[in-house]
Amino acid sequence: MKVKMISRNPDNYVRETKLQQHKMPRNYDPALHPLEGPREYVRALNATKLDRVFAKPFVCNLSGHRDGVSCFGKHPKELSQLATGAYDGEVRIWDLANRVSTRHFVAHDGFVRGVAYTRDGDRIFTVGDDKTIKVWKAEAPQVGEEEEPVNTILSRYGLHGISHNRKDSSFATCGEVCAIWDEKHNDPIKTLKWGVDTLHTIAFNPVETDILACCASDRSIILYDQREAQPLRKVVLTMKSNKLCWNPMEAFNFTVANEDCNLYTFDTRKLQTPLKVHFDHVSAVTDVDYSPTGREFATSSYDKTIRIYNAHHSHSRDIYHTKRMQHVTCVSWSLDNRYVFSGSDEMNVRMWKANASEKLGVIRPRERVNFNYQEALKHKYAAHPQIKRIARHRQVPRHVMNAQKKMRVVKDKEQVKEANVRKHSKKGKVPFVSEKKKHVLKEEV
Image (cartoon, rainbow, N blue to C red; front, side):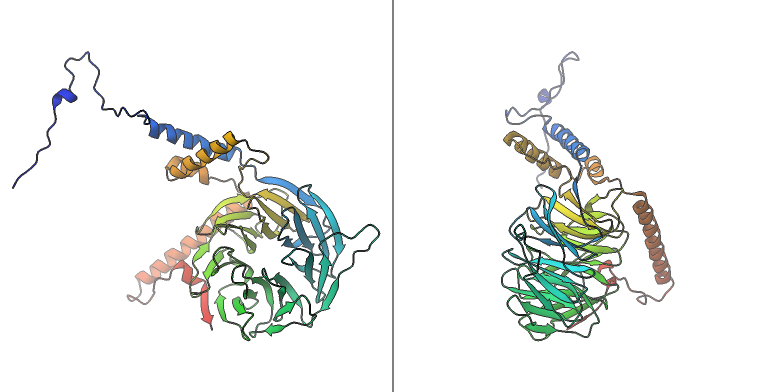
């Protein structure tokens, strides 16, 4: 057997006298630097610290409503236009660039339950507690003209939500039944029902535009296909879902905001278990909306905060809150992926930056190159403990922090109790159930 020995020449590393300096191995490539790693780490650390220093997400406050804000409607073609509905039946159209309300009119008696633009943006559909669907012009009336609806459709059933198809002239409403309508007719084309008292939210799939989903009062999520005569599938959760939003880039996936403080991302091909459970809220989650890239979504909650999640992560990457903001009832992500809008109980619409430390206004080319370099460094060194700690740290309101502590204690106590029961039971009698499967009761086809 031949053994190859490691041999070194002492002349390469041993000093001849004590007065000489130690010989250091060096790579004389001019493109490299012996301290490149430490230099980049310090730059990444400074970039992360500056990111938190300049994190000022709040942009402006849009005031004008005389009651709580209930729903949003995004214009499909104009970034600067936003429609909002309120509890007193008023609808306002906002010019976001100038931060003013350009129009306002009383659309319904009671709550405005939903606002939706047509696919070309020239009409606005609103539904309310008065069982009517009203159609309005997107353009403001001329001077001297009164604000009148183009069409008023009286529904047989109560209405709780509306969603417009992205590719054709059909739209859907939910209430006691799921009804599919056409813009040119005053009667529903199709009515779908699955023995449920109330459907309180509805959403068309933006990719597969014949598919739509509803959240029902019996804690279920129901999938429909407008080409079929019957609903497709139903999944029942442990608690009621408040809102549903489809991923605009992944046709099969949708996320629901639930009463149990969590959000659940499902794949329609496998509804038995959610793809991801999103934690961190400490009260019922009221609304959810995806970014146009499909990589992130924003959520609003009764705990008076807005959170931004990565679609594939369980915990939020950012939390937005102010002292004056009360229960947040609705949230929306702008179509240019730069802003998040929130509506709350205290009658205000707020505008936030999607990236809290992003610089607004004109950015010079050298600045843009520097920002990109800093982002690359932060991504490269994201796993280092010091950088990770600074990037994750957030100041939260005291009531949220106390509620999080309480929820953590309760969860730990339940886990200890379950472990003790399993320890003193026959083997296999108390099975291990994953967090994902705990919240889904059954699936019906």
